[in-house]
Length: 246
Image (cartoon, rainbow, N blue to C red):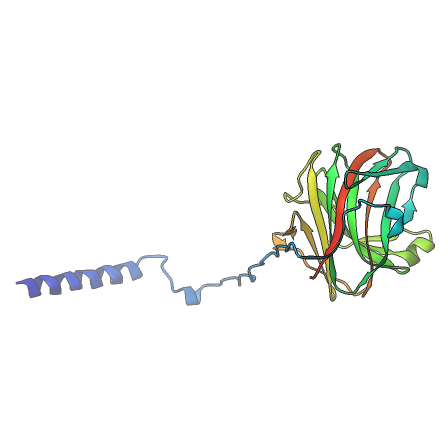
């Protein structure tokens, strides 16, 4: 009796499967037109193992030089104290200042800085790698939540042209950037011909993919950091600048 019940149960199950396969609209996936899924993008997270660090607690003129890209020098006011380099920009002309290290030269490097906005501002802060008399790469953020990855070309600057090329096309917004008067860490990785940008130790995204830029314009150079504004005042401080292995 039990054997007959089992046999009937198996028969009913087979009939149910056959009925499902016969339903209108049912098809084999092998016959469908499917789009290939792109590979999953795995963002990187920076480590804390710095191989150079400047806490900006001594005279900045010892290790760093100033490059004025736009504006005039008296629009930049800087003071040092409490282990911070405090920077103020006065309103008026558009301003863009870069501090370039005099001795640290790298081919492949990650440059990271911690910045404290003392007031919410559209002014950008930046880190720089592979700086030379030819130009450099630069990653910027502001306290409104936007970022840019740029290439500065000294030849274009000498010709009186716009020296910057935005390597991501335009200013982009990232939820990784803490907005308002607060602290952010920003970093730029220059490794081979690839550039990667990080905010608060997490790689930024563009178009739902971890951002990786390919460019061969500069192969080595100094590190740096900077700030720029579109003619408005700003007040902020850099807590440190350091380098990591990419």
